[in-house]
Image (cartoon, rainbow, N blue to C red; front, side):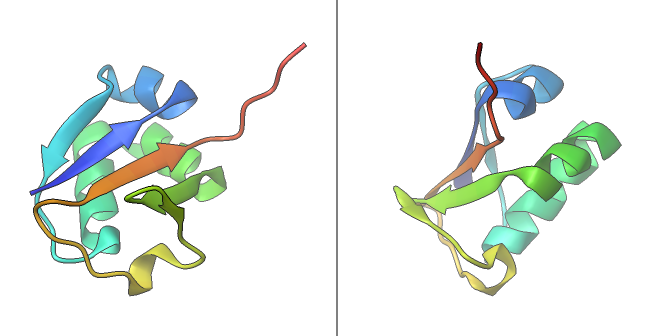
Length: 80
């Protein structure tokens, strides 16, 4: 299972910083996360950057993943 690491709003909605989630692609992992965390999580994903093992993905659905991968969800953050 890949480890999904969540930051900012994604972490708040999920109620946890990370979770191991099964899937053979980044899209499968993210879809499983939406199933687990709900529509609000899907809304955050729509505006988030997705990284795998420290590298930004242009298109998450095209990327395979394996049990040793770390997938990070990085929502936009505003500051003041």
